Image (cartoon, rainbow over all chains, first blue to last red):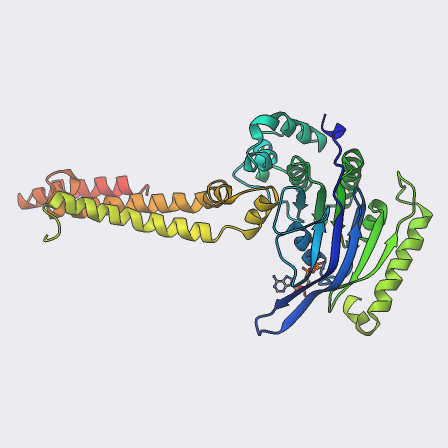
Length: 265
Length: 122
Ligand SMILES: Nc1ncnc2c1ncn2[C@@H]1O[C@H](COP(=O)(O)OP(=O)(O)OP(=O)(O)O)[C@@H](O)[C@H]1O
Ligand SMILES: [Mg+2]
């Protein structure tokens, strides 16, 4: 079974990373300024912060879809030079290949890496793992949003990534599906012990799921503070400690944005 | 009629041109419009260049490629009629000209109706 194989590495080191974009007029936009962060192997870290603070930018740098203007990102000591299957990525939009059915979507990573013949049996394992048994032959347009997002998750997991990068993967889901998916992601994370970096707008989601929460602030996008969530697992959603952490995060975000508070309210 | 030794090869050339143009334009615009996120997802799954072209770009552009093929099919029929009127000694286009020569207008109209029915599906 898939869960018996554990990944034993996946340490991310983000060292003084900066990323600057040019807007249409040629002005510089500092999407990310001097960000440093170490994510340990097997750790679950969330990035939270208001829109435009560089969360997706940081995630794309880790994924290798973009390159830093300054600094470097290391995975297990090796600089990241481009995208690779050991860093799986799931976006808010599931981005399933509409011309492939569920089974072939999940298999696409194995096909791309030319290991499908050897690992074909794992495809079914991961479809079962995300609870989509019986939907192997459905096409993406026949799935609900939550189901499509599960397929995207299975598609990333089938490659046994050392690091799972999630960019608001549950942002478009209703509250119930969302909570269910949170538990599912946690279960997979605990079974597989991958490193997870989750971008979310939802502070409660970050508290419920993460070992550590990285709080970011915009203009220029930077890491403001990192706080540990020292609540035992399994966590209860109505745990009174949640409230303390929640108000601490809100305080940090407000404090940092006093002069622009009206923008967020 | 300088470039082509006979009307047959000239007609073939015209038809090839009529098919090639829409197919090429629709395929290339289809590929240019493939969502970048498809390529990005494929890259994070470990795709190489070959996979990106044959397993992402082309399948993603299928709808456009098919439209191009249908347009090409339509215009190839039209061009075929022109070719037949120019000199190919067979087909409906040729038949219309021939019937016209004999002033058999009912045959001309019958052919026109037949063409209309046949081509309306494209
Ligand atoms: N390709 C790009 N070209 C120009 N500017 C960009 C580009 N990508 C991001 N930016 C800018 O960088 C900043 C940070 O963007 P980013 O997408 O990382 O924000 P975010 O924290 O993910 O926000 P959200 O929560 O809304 O997704 C924004 O000001 C954005 O305009
Ligand atoms: Mg974002």
